[in-house]
Image (cartoon, rainbow, N blue to C red; front, side, top):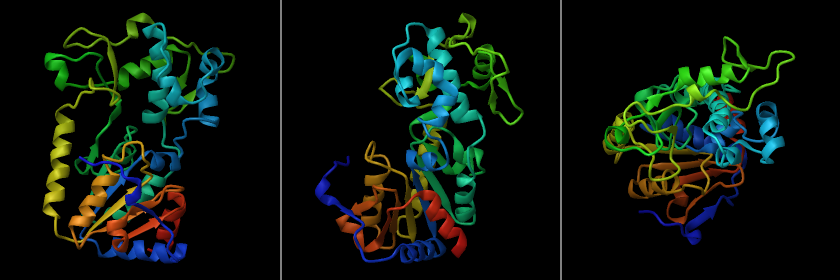
Length: 316
């Protein structure tokens, strides 16, 4: 169990320049026996997955006019009166954040930096960008779910262990609203077409195992389903950590804030503390810092992830 203690956090106030920090990170990448990437929402945001602003206005202006919320996150928690409207909202959210093209090549550039290393990825993101960008799926652990999966809304018995691929159903929902889907997955509103905010009742998904309504496989309460694939990934991650306990491990944290620090941030500090050969790197605009106990084996870079990867590309 990890507890937040603000006195333990040391923000990056060293006298090293940005270029010097990049050099340190580059050296650690080059010399590491293994790299563990810890990825939070800041990485997806840097890749273009913004939940407000232009992307929100493009796909959810009708929901904003009707209900007043101004970002996709808030819309996901709105108490819609019908399941037809619930899925009218969620099918768009899932499609543009899971099946439509990734807005930038940031994940691909990250892969280029670690593809020849022994790496593993631990992430709280649910957009599947790592696997879609070519990362080995056996080196990925998505702890908080996947936009591409359904689960029972109140799982019991067999449904407690199972999730269900949602691509075909979500695609049919999207088309039912009046969108067209380009070959690359981009959503297009045909000219002179008014997009509907609801899906037909026969598209509202029902769990084949317990007959209850389906919902998203996202960790928001204790009904979250950790299926067989989740447990296999968790075991592969633990085995990876065991195999590298005393080796030169770079714990590379990207865009992880203080929303769920017990999943990535605090364990990374602890692993670095326990292994004298380990090194911790934090890249996070506005939130770069580390435990005082590992400050001598850390580099904290208060810059955007894209900017840091650009510099690493130049020096590679």
